[in-house]
Image 1 (cartoon, one colour):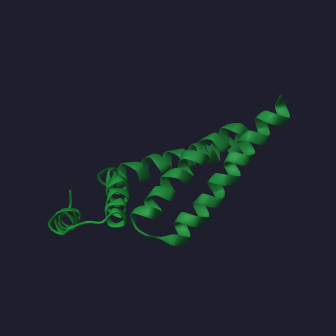
Image 2: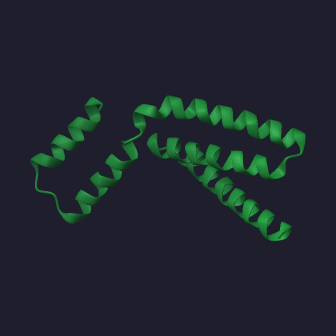
Length: 110
């Protein structure tokens, strides 16, 4: 854990925490759980992005969507981790479009 995380945990444990504050701390701690893997996640996102691009060039529509969805989910997490609202909301929009596209693919092909 980083010094900032320990300071927040220590600050919370020192004072009396009501339900709302306690919930905020738990949400923050659950978001920070994978913070140490942020760089690895970004490399995985790069690989997914490259594979998705190759899928698009090859004309593999479903593969492109299936590879792009986790790419977006990783960047949504990284946006939340660094509080970058544009990165977060753009990727939420794209993730929703990929979910729609994947669902539509299976409905139309059925």
